[in-house]
Length: 336
Image 1 (spheres, rainbow, N blue to C red):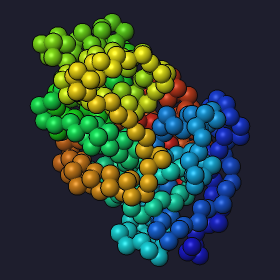
Image 2 (image 1 turned 60 degrees about the horizontal axis):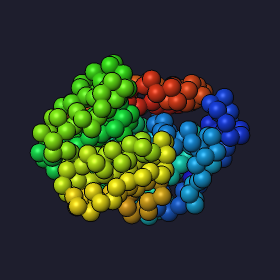
Image 3 (image 1 turned 60 degrees about the vertical axis):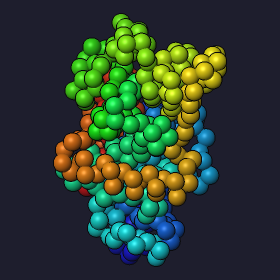
Image 4 (image 1 turned 180 degrees about the horizontal axis):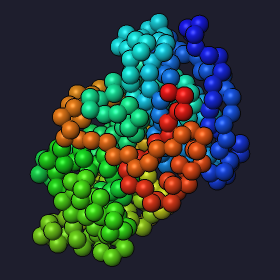
């Protein structure tokens, strides 16, 4: 580690499992790099649903993960392991982490780092890696969404929903998306969705059927689970694909697998955090190749709803739990 890098740092930790009030500033040792890792001075960290579960004690840490929340950051590389070749100190990057982002410094495998896209503010860049990697891996890779197909994206104003709408439209798909208020439906339309569905006032399946002449949709991106699952299976067109990204409404459901059989459906799902470095690296390179040019020409932009200093992390968590936000919530370091 370079001599001018401090040995200790500030980090946000949960003093015990619980609500946002358990988040406190603590002093931790600056993490040590492995040969394939870089040390990042964190400018900002994206807030994700997994952070809330981890704070509540409901998200068991995968092997090797630090006891500090934060799955994505942006910042400046200050040191590199001897096996690193892509980046050097002073490079500005955003990175996908296994954890540790809520701190002054974080380590990441070099392969999981990406240059901050052109036309993107470095603070906003902290909200890109987790959601865009997740959507790419699930909707574009696993579900192979193609131009001219139809996709239903649940939770259209979440970080996942926003990234899903932007990528689906960039790939030429027809997009249906759901939200719970008129204001959020306006935001979904602003993001580019063809049909914004207020699920409190409309039956999302009926809207999709009506607008596809009864055919149904080719892909459903689900972040809800529970009793949404059988409705989504029923909504899929022949050869349709359902991808499950999150299950807050429940992990079990009664599904008619006769429909899966007769309509040649695919039901899949995945999580980003447990993936190998190699898998995550492949996703990052795919984003750099296909999506970074879209940021550069402003075909895709970031959608940051609110930023909070690290010292106000509890307020950021309260906002996410309220579901009043549209897009990403970001923590930033007061020391930059």
